Image 1 (tube, rainbow, N blue to C red):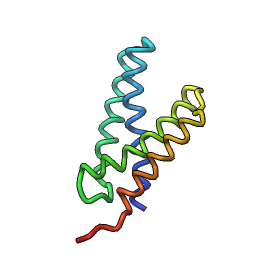
Image 2 (image 1 turned 60 degrees about the vertical axis):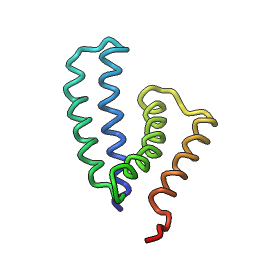
Image 3 (image 1 turned 135 degrees about the vertical axis):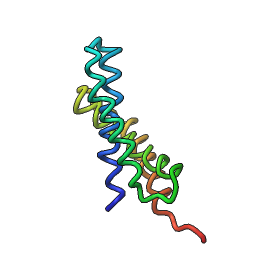
Length: 107
């Protein structure tokens, strides 16, 4: 299903943004930016395959997935597990994204 492309898109964006975080906040080498920029380009390309009928809706749907993937990143990469408020908030976001993606539309 094309909707699943939001998951690798989110991972690519988070990876790209984390490279900037690592460079500036963690004082890593600026060389971290090279794979980060490539990852951000991959993110943008992947999002063009969204099943949404326009870019704005694709970004809105993606937002819910991005939030969930960010919390997973925080847990798995940065060793900070989500608390119950994070899980509740992420669930609300996923419900919103699902409504935007799959709601019946009048023609």
